[in-house]
Length: 144
Image (cartoon, rainbow, N blue to C red; front, side):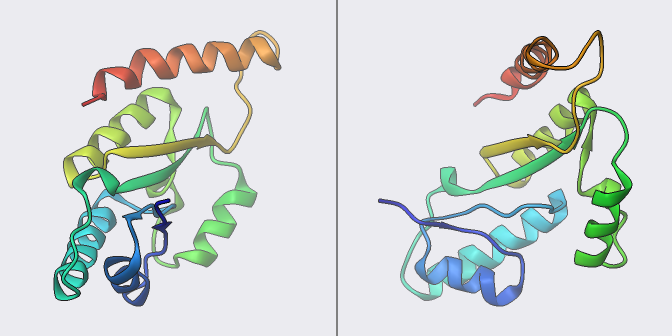
């Protein structure tokens, strides 16, 4: 059993290094991931531990079109001073670009989740199927 921890506060990152098997934050920028990995690694080393390089991931929200106001407000309250659009990928291509940025920072596992419904010729299973196909086309080339 492996236990991955989340969080972004310095205390949470240090705890992850001391006790966790991986780190999986959400609503974070690529710079935040790079900085967080460094703190987790530093704490793990100080505790005589090592976090496997494949155990850094990110929960990545995305929207098909526009970030709904209700989500933008929540994000502003969670991270004042940061534009909510920096925390949410826009469109499938934008999601692929964001994932590539996270990969460059050292993350290798991703949970992607939409904050809105897909648009197109009707909603429902067909629209979601098209979204998944587009995700595969854009994101599978990033696989390492």
